[in-house]
Image (cartoon, rainbow, N blue to C red; front, side, top):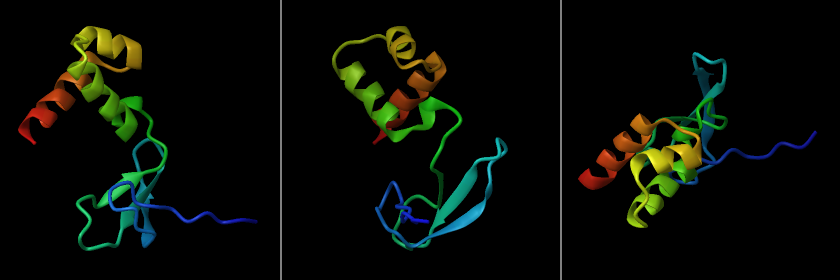
Length: 92
């Protein structure tokens, strides 16, 4: 049996502990790095819109001129998710 270390998606730290289950039954993890901006995370999200690479694609498509509904249709996520992510990106 081979164990692969789990890495935090924010800080890439391997000091991770289990932190309960999500309402969908997925395992939740907690990063023990005190400087990490993210406290808990999942490895397998139930909704694709929560994935960091999908969030990056939303920003890339917006910069290239794709509309909200077009982005949602291509990425198979809700238009509301696209709008909320773009609102977050404009505040940063």
